[in-house]
Image 1 (cartoon, rainbow, N blue to C red):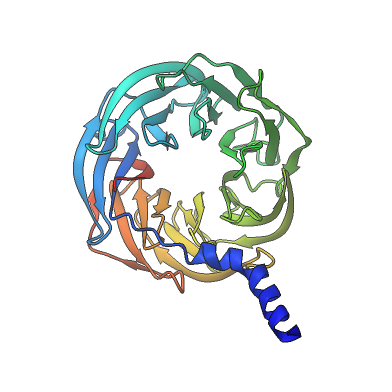
Image 2: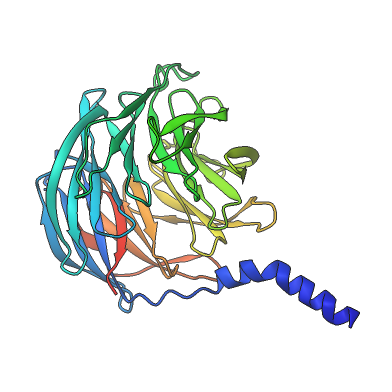
Length: 381
């Protein structure tokens, strides 16, 4: 009897992780939305492709050109709306565009646009579709736009202006807000500032006025000169990973109800590497077993790490060469494919992913599109 109780106790403790890891995704087709730079060499706006999970191929569906430099996209939780950051050079006023989206046809229809902070670089929307939150790199601030019932956007309702600098006077002479990411329970907003080497933390209440207020610990400092860029939570919500653009490194944090504690920093660079760096995007695999990060500059690669499920620490798995300037990438919800947007190669490379090992194999199913810099997948069936 004691032996049986011990077995049941062990199962009860590990079952949640096992259930999550074994969860199957049966979706066969997705809409692949591609954000681009429209002012550089021929791109028209946002492109939509139909991505077939059985063949790993993308087929062109549609495009919309009523948008300037949609360099980052976000899709509402109900898949009915798409919001795009309209990136502008320097601290010139940028903005946000709202679109109605028909997932069955892949068609986008423009709703409206709103002006905002300079050089918007990242955009998020809460699950209830109350607010859109935008990180403005050029302006060094974060802006909040209320969402109307029809999915369109109201004017800026809150603006948080960062101040300060860091040790690299060429890149960090002032604030450069790069990411605005809600915690899994949406109680907190985390936003990175490359210019001040900080990860800022705010309480978030969607219906409050203002919706954002400083958390008890309002920020955590990153390694000076590393330039924090993008963030990724583990699916179980226990860990947070930050990729640092200038230092080409990843820092792992333990996460607990709005508080983060650094546990490890790993370099993304190969031993002896002396070229230019520019780490860009980071994502955790759907099963929470691996972390991937892209590195631009002269490295032009994607690097994979396994995650210690108890500590959150990372162990190097492999590095793969990709196209030029791999700015953004995405992993499908089943974990079978990883797609990389190569800004300066005008291509999206499609990799088959080994779920057990985390390793990638390049397929022949490349998508040619001008200046791709953001990818989003939306389930069709």
